[in-house]
Amino acid sequence: MQTRRETIQQSMVVAGLLASAGFPQFAHAAFNKNGFDAKSVQDAVKAYGGGNIAESKDVTVTGPDIAENGAVVPLGASTSLSGVKQLLVLVEKNPSALIAMFHVSDAVDANFLTRAKMGQSSDVYAVAIMADGKALFAKKEVKVTLGGCGG
Amino acid sequence: MADPMRIRAQAAGDKVTVRVLMSHEMETGQRKDAAGKTVPAWFIQEVTAAHNSKPVLSAEWGPGVSKNPFLQFAVKGAKAGDKIAVTWKDNKGDTRTDEATVT
Image (cartoon, rainbow over all chains, first blue to last red; front, side):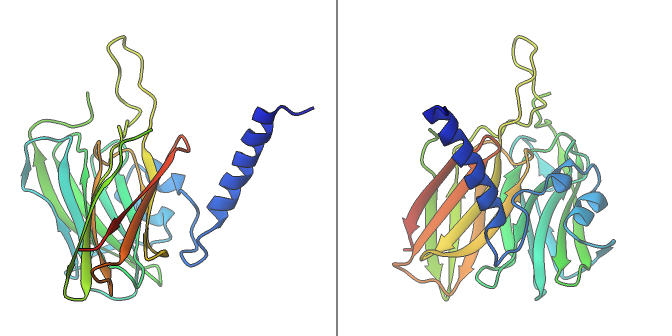
């Protein structure tokens, strides 16, 4: 006979499966592990269906020139293009290059700001993946005086 | 359970700028504690936001996002009095939703 704990655990697993199959309007897997396991910017972009990255003036990456504290570096990604499906923020030299992936819907601006950890001075990338798979990026070097990965 | 998120949603023109400060350790899984053991990865994986119950934002995060994550985004067509709800889910399955009214 199943204990109540087992029943609850099983239904949570089922709920988890259902949840990851949801959000039809965004049509994506719940959490793309491949993207976050990718070691390079290009591999992370490929994990989200993007093609070879090409630099573009229509994508903007924002960040400080010098980050005093690598644990908290404000980084932003934005684009003026329409037809963008996803905006990615990446730190090239981090152990896991991909910081965040934002789905761009009609209801929000393609403009996101967050704070990331940077282990060392590195190029920071903002990549816009278009509906047709084209990947456009902008990059900027951010120097870090004190690394932020707790090492 | 985690502390509540601080959400500020301010209307300007036909857009609302939403700033969220979440309370979460965001462990990368690379850090070692005082005893030398690796602290397991514990971080927010998914963030979603809804405007008056309609989903408007969905994002996937990795452990590279800073502790006590900050997020800023702008919702189109929102106005004062509307509700913005932000939800996060971490890699342990914990989840939290907080709501704010647009000012």
